[in-house]
Length: 208
Image (cartoon, rainbow, N blue to C red):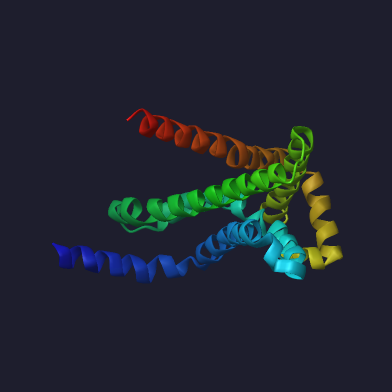
């Protein structure tokens, strides 16, 4: 039985995962922002002159985290490609779930750290909300540019491509709206649910 499962996993590993290189790349790009955010949050003072380049890079890469939600458009094709239902439920679905969950949690936790950092620096609630709104809007624009105009984070270094992408996005308001919905759900709702769950666990531990 174990040998059969091992053969099945090896076949899936060889034939499926490595035929979807975009998934590996997008997973890495989705994780990088939260790594940068953690480094910034824990070592802001020690980073000295490196803090600003790292902050800029983290902000530039941040849209890649919620962007992976749009990769679900590839799921139907991946299911059609799978040679059996076992491949679908044991490989394709878990891989897409891992990808989307990683991106959403990366984005939500990055914003969580941003809120904590701004609060610690004495920013008022109004300023914190305004800052988060700006970040959210820019991330939604980044998601739309990636999915609709097929641009990458580093394409900001090419003004001509960026302008062309912005023009394309401006004619697809539905796509831009959906990107904004994804960003809001990933950044606010997920963090709210996680915070509520954490408070519930602490309350139960306190009562016990």
